[in-house]
Length: 408
Image 1: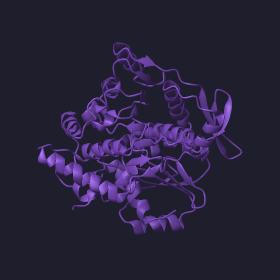
Image 2: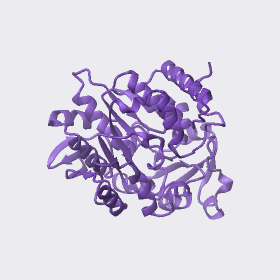
Image 3: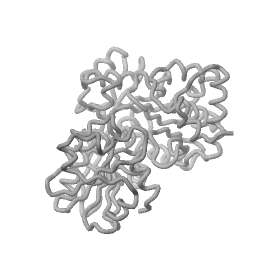
Image 4: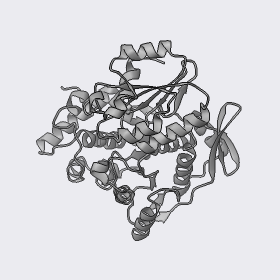
């Protein structure tokens, strides 16, 4: 039996091929397991992972004294594919994941269905949640929405659309309007959906919701602030300690709470207090005070802007050292223009990953402003020698590779 990783990273699977025909065929053969539980479907450019984690934590805390199981499917992963599929915050076991990848891959081959990596993992997630009898599943879109493999779901309990911005423009369109149409593709007839009025794609989302007769859910008033070194969320004037840093998390929390309200759950203040205090989302403005390291998986211009604003507010007077890397399909020019301040030290990490941006692909003006590094040894030296705030940002694949070698 092949390992799941060997199958998923093989050249015939490790690519993007949007569309629903292939996953529809394999799920039909498996008896459409995705129809057996209640789904909260989350799309957007930035923040969808955080929204998924907040919703998941609220549901897990709410049902912790019952037999109700909560499934969570997110992407990408940091260290292992098994991170993508969880039940009640526990990753799928490596052995179970290997077995299901092999089983479903063999079924697909026997029926001449050429699944991509993401389609195969999504099918595994749907089937794993089915055989373990989950009641709720929080489902994160992989890319776009309309033609994403997760959009095979017919009648989600709730749809959530987070901030929309320019990203994956070669596949989703070059304007906010085109991208918003793709994200709005998860909205189903007579469904319930939540999005913010501040969303750049608001007009498109509102029109699609109207056309689909979908009810748009109102969100509570939320803000995030730091008091005496502790991060708090203020929800309709109630105060909760909040474990996710950054002002942008106010929008993500508002969307999550709107979704919870929309599905009809009456969450007590005590449940919310516990959920927000303990919710975790690694490598999203994650600060290690002891090592003076901040890790953030911002990998597009809007995400990088959130990071830079956070640094300017929370660490205004700190000297900063950046370690940055991204994939070659990202707008590195805009990201570097946002990040590069005159007094900051900046390292460009040429990491080992398919489609990683190489130093020699940078335009000359950027080569002059950054220092190239390409080994973990160099990164360890920076961590050990620099007293500055060290900011690791960019591709999650890069961050996972670094911190699988370096423990903080």
